[in-house]
Image 1 (cartoon, helix red, strand yellow):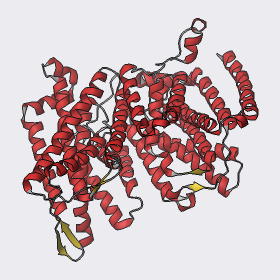
Image 2: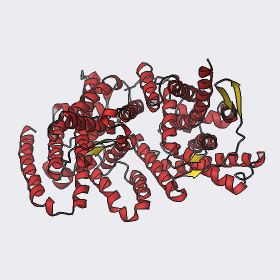
Image 3: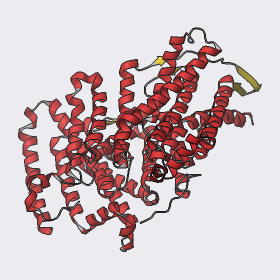
Image 4: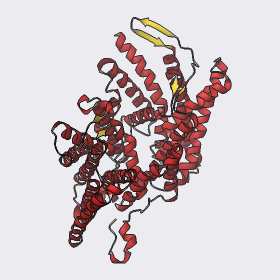
Length: 313
Length: 299
């Protein structure tokens, strides 16, 4: 697998080069509205990736992922506004702050299982929002405005590529197998001498980090952020993307989040009914295709099926 | 002391509304292990049903005892039907698939109902005064509103009724059996699907009563009104130990009191965070809630 991973990093560099080539040569001539949708897809991709690790691969039900995005967004915003750090540095700071938040939330609450964990993460999300709404120096409910607008196609997809590749490699490693083992049977995993709490917290922290980065991109997208952007309906939307794409798949949630982010825009001509249609699609998908788009498989398994030995779900 | 008593009255009144909604969450969780996100929308649509029933019966112009009683009963019946319909169309086809799927479906139903109501009924409606709104000055700074008295008495009556149904009737016993073990209940010849439908009807009708009381008290209703109330009521159910009926009531009263006391004595800015802080603290010490049964994990 190490060779495959090495090849992956090579491919990633090529990918980054292509992304920047598109950014420099194609984006300026593209419809800004279309570009904007693509950038928003990219930001959701990052957040969904982190949640796919926590929910899809480690089996921990988090309903507070937007809370980590909020931590990342506001940290990045504050670092840029008060310390005048360059946006990229501020965003990485935001990601790290979200990771620390993930550690603080994860350590005590990962003793809880299933729905109780979901409720505590939901509560964390609620608390973060109330704290931000009452923090005058973060703009309160009126939002933090006047940040640089830095997020573009190139930066967004550079982060998406780095995040996707590192998560792919992580899942292929021994640590990745621990995550899946925890998801499939926590007690059996523990009986093999594996520290399952440590594994869960690790997944939580990494997931939070990428949510934080996504938050940073959101902050520098329009140059303004509002607490209402990160409320729990956003968390629920992210969970819907992971489940629709297929828990236990990385590419599935990525496809689902692309579709679900772009869909409301496509439906804009019938704006009044778009949320109703969106909801009916969600229900219909769950009834007709309960395992999600790709189930526990990856897109690559559909494309070059004979080459792979043994699926790693 | 008057501040204390005043907040006690306010807290109990708020807690009673939370309790009526929380019971629906906890009963559905008990039978299906599902966080029924659509429940908050059943509550919201109950408020709109009340409004239209009041207009249809003329209670909004001239509220008589009979017409208001029809509005309450009609609202509860509407919500019961709505709950059963949701269960039949959206949840029953998923009975055999994973809980996560059921949860996403519930979220979808919630979005559908909220946005559907927004299209059909518009963003905001004012609600007529259907109940007498007297205020009694018990002491300086201590008022008792007739709404508080009505809310608390209606809640008490409904809870007594619920207790009777769950503990004393055949259907109640079947509900308890299904919540204990769905498979075993099915093997004993209990019509599980019908019991689940009844559970939805029961929980939803309580939400309907809560919606009526809330709407009369607030004088305005909107399609978003369910989101916040539903979330709080759900937190209350978890506080008390989700799946436990007395737990939901205790959790709701506790939550109502903490919210009013903190906003009365300290500050109202952090009011919405109290529910969550209380939740996290209680779950850290009692991971299954106050009255929840701790189920040991089995291999």
